[in-house]
Every structure is written in C-alpha cells, then in structure tokens.
Length: 404
View (cartoon, helix red, strand yellow):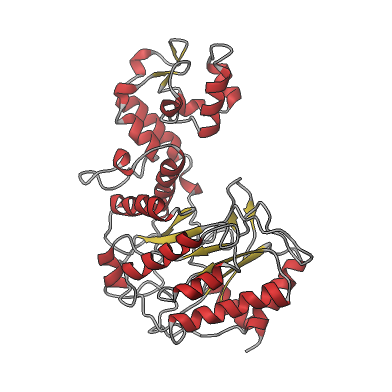
C-alpha cells in the first residue's frame, strides 16, 4: 500500500474526532521549521474566530477495542493501515511547506496495548521535533490506560493533549465502550492536569463527548462538562453529534444527525465558560433537555421575565451578560461608556449589541424599545423562535465540516 492510499484511509478514519480545536500555545521557532507561537493550529475555529488548518490523521485505524459507535472498532470489516514514523513526518513537512497546514493532530487506534501505542506516538513526534526540527503546533491524543511516565514524556513534545470521555455517563460508557472505564479516563486527564506547564502541553487539554448515541439527557451531558472544567481545567469540551456509521442493537436508529442538539450544547457550554452561568440555571432534573427552538440564553431569559426589562445604564456587568443580544465585549463596553454619558439605543448598536434580540429585555434611560403591551412571554418567544428559524440551515457538525 502506497502512502497516498494510507493517507486516504487514516485521514478518513480520524474525521469523527472533534476534540482538536486549539489555542494558547507559546512554542517559538528556534532555528527550525514552523511556529505555533500565540496561536493554536487545527482545521477548526480558533479562540479569535479564525479558521485554521491541521493535518488530522491516525497512526493506525487498527484497534483491539470494540466500541459500538466507532468506525474503527475491531469487529468492523474495514480496510486497515498504519503509517511509519518517517511517513508521518514527511507528510507533515510536505504539507506544511506547501502551506496546506499549520500543524498536526495525531491519534491512533489501540494496537497491542495502550503503552505500546503511546510509545509509537512518542516515536513519531520525537522524530518530527528532533530529527525534522518541526516547531509547529502538535496536538496528540493521550491513550487511555497508558502509564503516567509515557503521558509525561508525550506532553513534553506536544502543545496540547486530549483524552476523550466519549459518553456522558459511566453507564452508557459500559454499555457502548466495554473496554474503557470512566476511572481510567479520569486518571489520564488528572495526570495531564498535574503536569500542564509552559513546557508540558502548554495549550492544555480538551475532550470530546458523543451526543445521541445513548439515552443521556442534556442535563447529564452538561453536568459532566461542568465537573470536568472544574476538576481538570479543560480548555474545551467538544460535543460530537452521533453519526450512525455502525449497525448495532445497542445503538439508536436515527433518521437525522442531531446537529441542532449539538449546537444548543455548544451554546450552553459557552454560557458556562464566559457568561457565569451554571448548569442548574439552564436545566434541571424536571427539565433535562434544551429547547431546540430557542438558544439557551434566550430560553433562560424568557423564563425569568421577572428580572426584565433591565435598565442598560444601571445593570451590573453580570446582569448585562444575562441579556440576550449582549455579549462579553459589548457588556464591557457598556460598563465603560456609561461612566461618561447615558446610553441610548443608537449607542448600543454602535457598541455591538444585537438589538433585534436585546430590545425585548432592556430599557434605555427608562424607555422600552417597543410598546409595553408587547412585554409578554408569548410575544417575545414567538419572535425569537422566528428569528432562530431563519438560521435553521446554518447548523453544521464540527466534526464533519471544515474538513474535520
């Protein structure tokens, strides 16, 4: 099998892993090739909104595990292949010189055992760093069940490490990935967290959870994410809508990939990380799933109309973040500008507030944008749903678009 055929197989086998978005690396070029300084490299969206490119491949798609949802599971009759360390290095350098990519995301199926697989990954990246003098961004998957010594060795070579939690609960993991355990996953994540530094995985760690392959609710999914952020200082949790690539009695038969659900989870995740929300603000045991018709922030606001409309010239920074249409940047600008004068609706447009959403929830110098008779739940909800419907065709799965 030639290298082009291997690349076709092993790039396609890696496409369902969405956990390779990156940012924050400080690796400088020291008389080598490539530079990841101050920017993360992947074929996704960076923290500053740029779409950036990454060579995303598996070392091998052979695997001793039989995870029900995975296209590379051992029971699947698929074409198998494996790169040599030298082949990966040469592909990476050739692509980089042609400006196709800015870095590498490398993962692998489990061959023989976890430590053997980790040693193979370390061999590749060590060769790329030391023999080929590549200083560009590298994100690697830490292999579940591998020794802490090998995790430390790998972390000193790469910019980011990740270990996928895969499922939202221990029960669904046992059911669909019987060779894996929550305890082992958390042990790897803990080992990474303890060692993260300017020299060890300086861009931190991320993880991925598959959405829709199990019966877990959005509440369970987001509770897990909230816990992972707190315990392991994760940079990102990625949500990957389940794609029915395998047929199995334990897997759901879905007519459509649940992209809208994935989108709502990403929106909620953003609220946790940047808007000071907690999962219990958004969901509960009684209401365990997001409203697919409304984004989580707007849905929360509609269910808390008693605190609205808010006076834009008096509301605290934290309260401003609760207003649909007001983002982190615009909230900071409001707080700063109102020190000098009272803000009106035209000022908010210039600041970057999304007026078509915010207008239902704010007062500007005591004035409501609409007639006060329109300040009711049914009217506001209907208009926001109509606005969201206009964007219905824009939902795309992170792991399937932008060549991921």
